[in-house]
Length: 388
Image 1: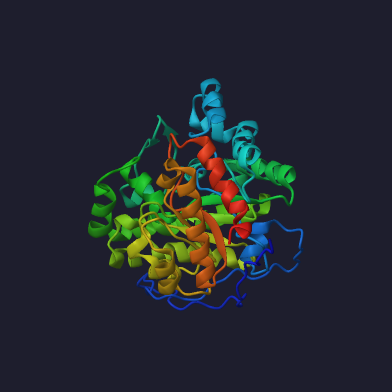
Image 2: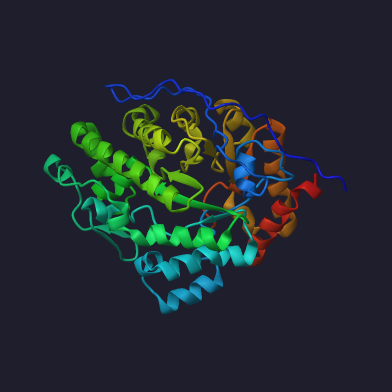
């Protein structure tokens, strides 16, 4: 069978309007933003990097959010010997082993570091623990507490992250891209202000609408530290970095423009000054009402969740972005024929829209997902060019 190349035009990265002003607002308007081609490119680069810069590739790259972790039996067995999350994510040998478990099983085109968005917090003078969910020992709710948040020195605070990324790059080579990730300032702030996970987000909303100057001061510090953490991961070997703003959809869109969007954009703009060729993915869970605002933050790749029709998402944000996603992770509980159909539906939608695409789920893989179904997902995606 003759294979068909998957490609789209590679526009130049352009300046984005709606940068942060003194009112800390981001306009909810789509704006073109793409990853500029690295100064030195090679046909031997990982498929994901080639696809993102617009090279002709026979199929879209594929990986899966939360691909390393609790659905895999090998991970469950490891947890019996190493029961605490922080040990698993902060010991280099374990973090590398867990990150590579899905690589050995499925050969994804992206290998993401096994870690947590809260990992750098102790380096900001914000101690936390997992028991099993996140616990912030001293929630920050006053300006005096914000003033004690320190500048992050990632190498001093979490050297295990850098060493894990270096070992992953050495092991993987050019066979796949190594991904790092960070939490967006607002999402980090929800944990810091609430004291952990929350269903109501009452404390951070009380701060946002009652003492916004305190929240802005916290978010500003977090944005600077997150940008430094992205740079640290890139320097250690991460070839792509994903920003997770997991709880931004808890904000009304007009409040996203005040408390989330400007600080995501601050992170991205800051990183681009020093690492202009690093592809940055932006993911927001439940982002259907925020897509144009995500575009205004000017990431290189917009990660669509399953609440968004892929074609509609591209129409709303434009074809200058690369896109990631967006199959419902629940599909992996269906039959293998159904999984194949949905994988191909997603790939065909991206191809029809003429955009660069990374095949992924719309959210992390769910606990209890059959491993052979995950394997089938990867198999179908890797052979998509033979199925068109």
